[in-house]
Image 1 (cartoon, rainbow, N blue to C red):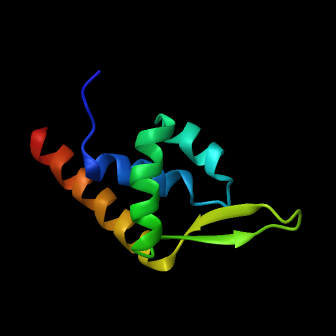
Image 2 (image 1 turned 90 degrees about the vertical axis):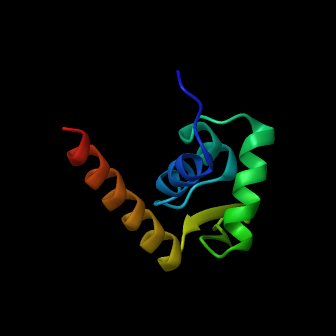
Image 3 (image 1 turned 90 degrees about the horizontal axis):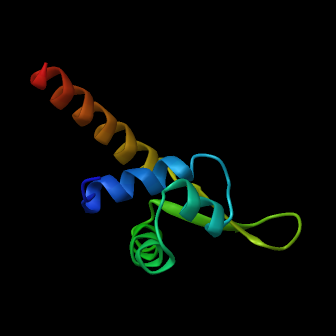
Length: 87
């Protein structure tokens, strides 16, 4: 398994937060350990790519923002272009 870079990890976290999720669930979906997840997650949160809100049970949930969706869409297009260039 090859190492993922910042961009790949950020995309995985953004994809995992398309639907409102708790932090732990996003961490599992992105396949990261707690320390690495917190490092990247806090940066995405501070840049306004993910937002926090309180659920009906009073616990924090997180979801991708419009800005985060735009970044995710750009990353997907870049992957598509790179994949077609390799073929």
